[in-house]
Image (cartoon, rainbow, N blue to C red; front, side, top):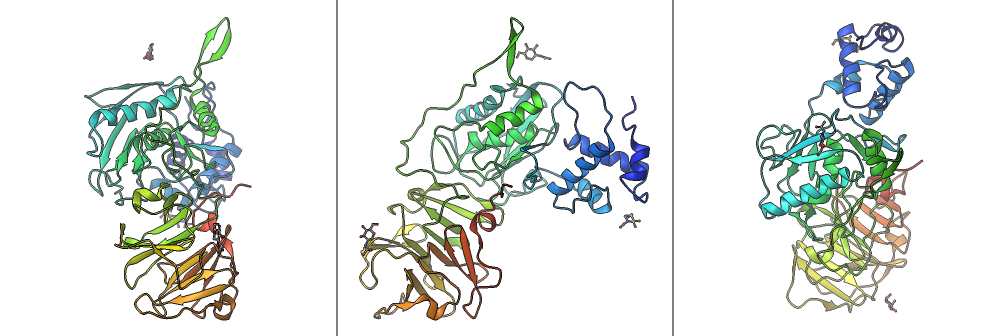
Length: 475
Ligand SMILES: *[C@@H]1O[C@H](CO)[C@@H](O)[C@H](O)[C@H]1NC(C)=O
Ligand SMILES: *[C@@H]1O[C@H](CO)[C@@H](O)[C@H](O)[C@H]1NC(C)=O
Ligand SMILES: *[C@@H]1O[C@H](CO)[C@@H](O)[C@H](O)[C@H]1NC(C)=O
């Protein structure tokens, strides 16, 4: 069978000026097909692709690789295709499709094997979590999964710490939780530096992350719906977790629906979902980092950025947001719905403000005698930050601010925000001095960056959701 009957035409029209020799063209075509950029419906047995389909596939690959979308096979594109991969490139920018398909297994009965276990959970619980993760997908497709404990399985699951056992090293706690290869490679790796859990808001839920990684291993890219399982950001443990319609549609586009024929009619099997909640539901709703305003934000202990909303906190990294966890699981004794928070670089203490009280922590330990009454400033502070310039803490409320020296007793006098900062609004939600020593102010979805002269930088405000939470922008 002639695999690439259009090759001649491509050499002329797609690749242009014979940039590529025929073997390179063949390599590129094979890559686009293997990784799902070029695909025919399952039923089609034709292997022919039109020029337009090939151009679209190259564009989709370039978009996903953050290369200029020329639709032409140039050196940069080829180079990107040749990069070694352990784990999935993030095709997150693929906003033109509802879901991005990365490839497909040719068989529907697949085996899996768990090569090692995390010490965080009993072995049987790990096996149950992985089994449940596969079940989400087998419930909605004709796929069948069987665990084996010897020999080479189609899908190979293991836990790794740092760079051990994988060419793409993990990064310690937070950030990257797991990664998987696309069909038909079958590796699924979990970061052993995470705290893997089940039935708990603490740590990272193994079942949900496994279901997400299996989604990749079976050929799904990331979804642009932030509440889909295949969203690029883990949104934390949910006791009533279930697949999003976009997850189901994406997988069914790859493998078809789970149905059986009865009287010549297709009947869909009802997906069985949800495990019973193992802990009581939290008091407040789980926030959505993409849409909710902030209560507070700090550059906290160990240089991590923490964002607070309601009863929850999540970290912000260069790669987006970390899992949303209960504040109580990190700072024991701290209430939710905080007014403001600040971490002092000078004393390494973290202060939290709510109503007419404030709490002081060293790392995650509440200091003796706290909470204390807020007496030198009015209650209901709205934002707080540590300014490296004078090593003082700034508290904000309405249009006013107070400067507070942690290590000296002084009367605090309110001053107008506009008398110190140029271009910063009043009634702030949150503020911090970040790793780059710059001051940021937050209000709604907007944020302002302030320069050394304490003026708002040009081009601000920008969107917090886009820049800080790295949420995809629809439309
Ligand atoms: C592409 O790479 C080849 C081989 O490395 C080189 O000869 C050619 O000049 C490059 N073309 C462009 C447009 O950079
Ligand atoms: C797949 O597995 C099912 C049962 O699990 C079995 O009935 C079917 O024959 C298998 N198909 C293949 C192609 O092995
Ligand atoms: C502070 O906030 C609480 C709760 O929103 C409110 O009941 C109280 O009146 C506020 N106090 C002041 C002085 O603004």
